Image (cartoon, rainbow, N blue to C red; front, side):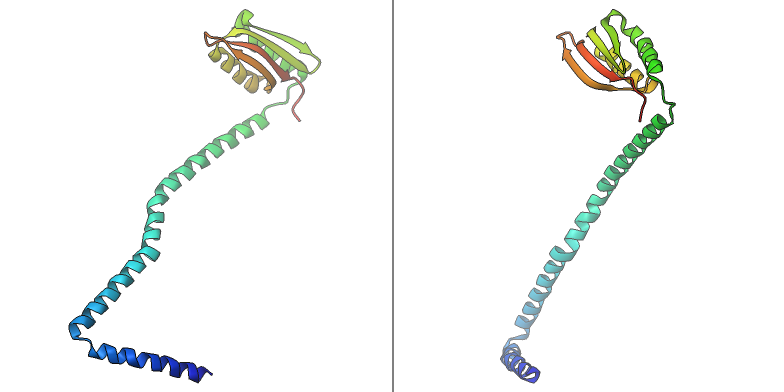
Length: 169
C-alpha cells in the first residue's frame, strides 16, 4: 500500500516537472520569487508579528505588574502593623474614641451600649470625618460596622456611625 501511494505521488509530479521544464527561465524566476514573497509574508504574519507585538507590550505590562506588587506590599505592611498592635479592651477602645472625638467639638456625640458605640454626627466636615475615621482605625483599632450618612449642601456630613468596641478576634 505504501508503495502504491509513492507511485501516485510520482505520477502526479511528472506532469508538473514536465510543465516546469517547458516554462521559460524568466517565468521560473518569477514563480520562485512569488513563492519566496509568499513564504516571507506567512513567516511575518504567523511568527514574527505576534512575537514583536508581545515584546512591544511587555514593558507596559511589567510596569503595571510592578505597581500592583508595590501596592500589595504596602497593604501587607499595613496588615502586619495592625496585627502587631496590642489588643485593646472595650474600655480602652471607648476612651480612645472619646479622646478622638474632641477635635470634632459639638458636631459629634458618642453613645456606648455594651460593646457598641454609636457616634452621631451633625455638620462635620469631610476632612475632619476622614481624620477621625483614620484615628479610630489607627489608635482605637476599630472601624465602623454600620454607617448612615447624609451629605449636606455645604459639603459637611450628618448621620450615625456604629463601631464595635469588642476585642479583635
